[in-house]
Every structure is written in structure tokens, then in C-alpha cells.
Image (cartoon, rainbow, N blue to C red; front, side):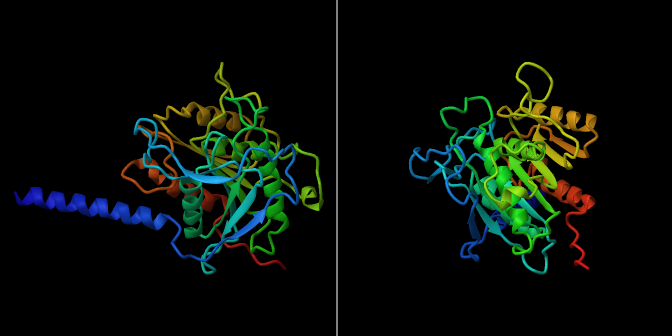
Length: 321
């Protein structure tokens, strides 16, 4: 009887630890307001601005077979004016590295809380500036279903150049700017990392003369990476010389974006001699974000931090001569 009671106490303590850990992963209420910067100086390319007012709403409650986080979280949609929301880490932790965060949502919405704010808080905890990219959603009528929307890549390329142009002012090392994305946002991060030599819009100012190549990219349960009819990467993707190091993480039981998306991208990167790392977590579904949980998929953040350390992005940059 005593052994059973001890077991219950341990299980209760573990659950409380997980709850506290998840709360700690979220931005603190009342924390210093982040800096918000518009991505484009005027209207974004190919933007009519007639899709309605930008708004937040709650995501639908989904089944555990579909996603790891089943309760509703905040989404943002009807985005016509892309922005950067910049969260700086504590000064004593700051490594000089920054990461643009691309929330997922199928190019229809942005999972702002689960794959934006919570990710920025995690990045801050390891000394990285987290910059949430609010890119244009939903997909427009000329952006077909089942394919990546093209306007978000314009926003992402511009965003990398914009961050690099302001690196010194924002306390960021200009050669330590990466991207992390989830689901459709994972595709966006990887597409940006592999299309840096072909800007998807006509340059408009001095910012666009600055490189839009991220120094590394991270794709988590990414979609749109696999061709529909064969075991190859999607036809809209290519891996040019100079593609930066890429980290990939995926759930083995993901039915929204099957793990083949990341597996085939990893094989293509390896064939192109691009440094890459792949983690597949057995029985994990979609949408686990960075939340601690009892499932091993929640340890991807630790694996990623170790990878970043090995790549040299978690070491404080040397001061300029």
C-alpha cells in the first residue's frame, strides 16, 4: 500500500513539474514589450490589402492522433502588413545570435502562441534573440491549395535582409542570423535558406542589397518539402551551392506532415554536401512546438541547442578588432 502511495506522489510531482515547466516556457505576463518593426516600407509586393482586418482567434481543439498540443491556442490571420516582433534575451546570456521564427498554419493562419511567442521565450532562455515573423496569410486566390504560398517567401527574404541591416543596432552578430519554422513555417525557413541567390521580388531599397541568406535554418515537422508523386523533394525547392547548415525534426506518426518530408530533405542535403542533422521521434504527432512534455519529442530543443553549440552559434561573438 505504501509503495502505491509513493508511486502516486511521484506521478503527481512529475505532472506538477511538467505544468510548471510549460508555464515557464511561455512569455511572462507583464514582461517588457518587444520591439515591433514593419518588414516593408510601404505596401508589400503583390499585396491588394483587401482581405479584411487582421485578427487573432483561437485554434480549434484537435484530436491527439493529429497533434501533440490539443487545446486551443492563439492564431493570427488576415495579415497584409508583415512585421518583426523582436524579443531580446537577458544581457548576461546574449550570444549575439538571432533567429527569425516562422509559425505554422498551412499558409492560412499563424500559430502565434504555440509556434511564435513560446519559441521566442525558449530562444531567449539559451541566449538567442527571438524574432517572430508575421508573414502574409491566408493564401491569396492566386496561391493554389496544396502548394506553398509565394508571398510569404518574399516577406521572409526581406526579413533576413532587414535584420542583417539592423544587426549592430539590435545587438545581433550579422553572421549569426538563422531561422526556425514549424509545419508550413518550417517549409518557409528551409525555402528561404535554399533560395537566397534568387530574390523573389524586385529590390526596392538599400536593405535589399544586403544578403537574404540565413546562416542556418531549422525546420520542425515541416510540410511541402516532398514531391506528391515520388520520393524526392518538392519541385519548387532546390539546394544551391552555399546552402547553410540545416537541422530537421519530425514526429514519426505525423499524419498532417508525414516524416518523409524531413527525411527526403535530409537525403537531398546530404547528397549536396550540406551539413544537416535529422531527428525523428517515434509515435509523435504534429504541433509539439517547444513545450515540455512526457514525450521524447519535447527533447528536440535540447538536441537543437547542442547542434547550435557545435555549429558555433551559441558562443558569444568575438568583439571586432
